[in-house]
Image (cartoon, rainbow over all chains, first blue to last red):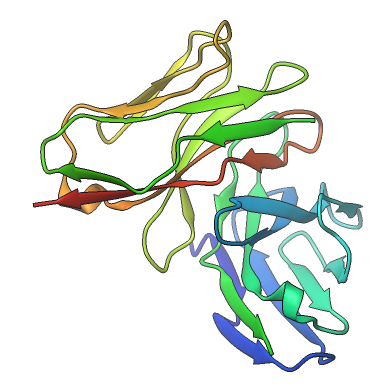
Length: 113
Length: 112
């Protein structure tokens, strides 16, 4: 049982390049989330998926798109990276059905130059 | 909207000292409250939680009590160890999506 996995662990992009961050969970959870972590600001919600086939914007969605490919996988895409998107990105999942706690992946550290 | 306020860090303590990290929140309804811990280079791990007023969450010697009257959820530990050095985040969740609203985090450094 690997929990929540994320790839890649590290990435450096040039301004304007695109990339997709991958996230998968093997806990049969219904809900999945993408957060970004910036120094001194805690984590902020980018996008959320309540279940397969549904997605919803969070607090800071601009510049990002998501795909809930199936129940296990939830990807985050940067179409045209900007230096302001330099951050650490965390994926999380939650069982749903009244359960409150979220389980986090190890994170992806992204630098945009 | 919802918000979480934590005490500024870093907090530096000697081993076996008593720890308190203050956390207060603002929410429109009746949130669930959490403490997460982040060790260097790792993701966040759930430390403890409380889902209703007066609940006490506890784990690994850490405790926090959900105080609705003071909108607080302070984290305490009676005797810290070097291995407790990490960043601690207070968070709440509310509403259908149950997304987490985080505080800014408090770095704890425990010296031998």
